[in-house]
Image 1 (cartoon, rainbow, N blue to C red):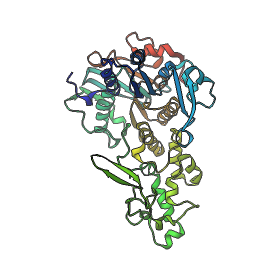
Image 2: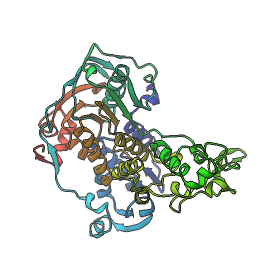
Image 3: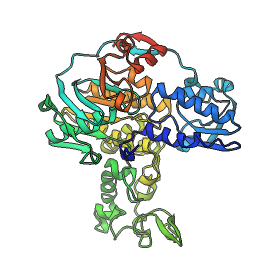
Image 4: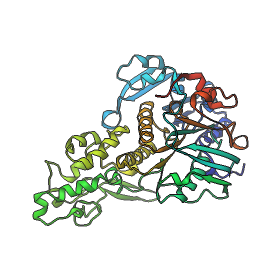
Length: 473
């Protein structure tokens, strides 16, 4: 009962909030839940489904914003918004009984509501390039456990919420690799949460990893000054292109002139934010579009410079897909745009503010930034539930890119609940068998197909229920 909130997993927090409503016994209430399945193991979704059914039986209404198709299939009514994302979405594609969604050809969701059997990988794609071995791990509920991670392959860490997945991936593997390599890309805290000692008897194989990339759903920036174009680095080349125009050269303007962080080129009213903060008495401040530059961030003198008919503000207003056509002969910019589109973010604008991005979008932008680097250094990529907040179609794109990293010779480790992602892994490290004091044990280290035969694995049981075994390759 005295467990700190910051030590709870996403799934535990979600269910804790729901549990607070159970004992109320209310009726006539509309429960609006934003992705209640986020961070929840398939074994726990059954309990969640029963809880929602109970709410409705007691005379309440439940409205879910949801991507988990097992919950969508149980709904009485579905409102499908799309058909795509961003400028390609925003329409009600279907609103009606769930069984009618399957006949809507325009719906991307329709093909996932009743999917075919899950294909389980039964062998790694190729031999491992070594192994990362941890002996005597003790951290939170993990006590004296040994774990071996094959290098150059895709490993999924599975188990119910609270079984120790995030602890293993973030506070054990991530921290030890981070201390051993010279290059690290991470936005995780440097120290584990308070009162959490992490001890390991021995570690082998750290010398085989040159680089760590720990990619989470934390925001890529906390102010409107951080945008997609700046985070991915493509805006550096864009600014150079504008500085190389004849108009800019005649005025002796450098690339700094086309940065909304430099006083000479930005709008003086909003200081390049495109917005002004409106202070409200007794309420949190809010933002409104700048009345001078109308959200364009730059002053009129800077906007007088054009390249192929575009001002620098026009470029920031382009979607990733539209920008690909504009920059088709600019390899440096095009590579970044292709990486963003491959991960399902073709709809996003280059000037999209970090504060307006979802956690799933932020994580995929980080991944796209990694994909465009195409580094030769053996990199360990760590992800904590990367499928959270993603539509099944986006999960397919994400999974393909993670496997692309492995095909390039890198190592990918994901803590994950999504069955479709787990099914394609080369190896599965299943923790459990339960949560909290009943978890923290290595139940199995095997392939997804073989996990179905492990009697003590809840993950294996749910994979078996949906499975069709295939041979890797």
